[in-house]
Image (cartoon, rainbow, N blue to C red; front, side, top):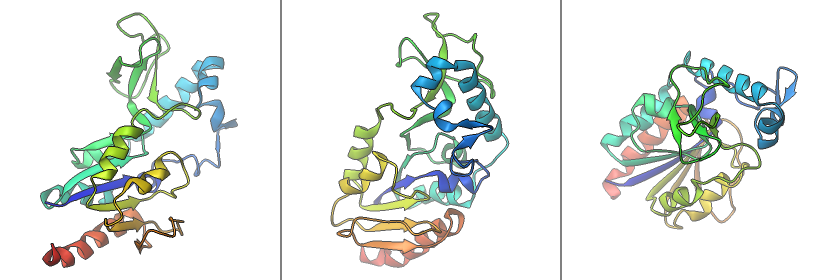
Length: 232
């Protein structure tokens, strides 16, 4: 089976009802997102940061995967599918996808403030200020905040290098370093870009652009791929 690598962004989750920073206008309540999604925010007002992510987690419990998530999961019958996502929700996993790399962390997990290697599942939606790791240190959201390194990038680049088909779904390719993953994709690899908005791509890269939201565009992509299977 062909290896299909898919980079997904906030667009696919927004269709399920997940509010993005763009939806918020860069603000949550009266706070700039940098005041709730940065190491400086955690150092200055951890209670506020905790409340922000608890609300995001609570919302996640109320939404479901959409047709875009489901189509990617079902594609594992015909392709070796590896998903690299910029999203911190678990909608890909809940739809049935089995190989998902989260670049920016996972909302339903926490990690130790003393040892980043100590990562825990969160039971329910609430992470409390009194919750600690096995070493007694406070737990923080398992999220890559603005200004922090993206530890999974090297693994993401390795996955992109092995792509035989590459798709970009619901992301503007403006957020680095994730946007640079397209440069790791082999030159001979066909690239599909699914988004209802115009998205800039490197001029040297030939792209099949499906101008549609994820729930419509992802199934359309698989229809196109099904027609090309006789070439393989």
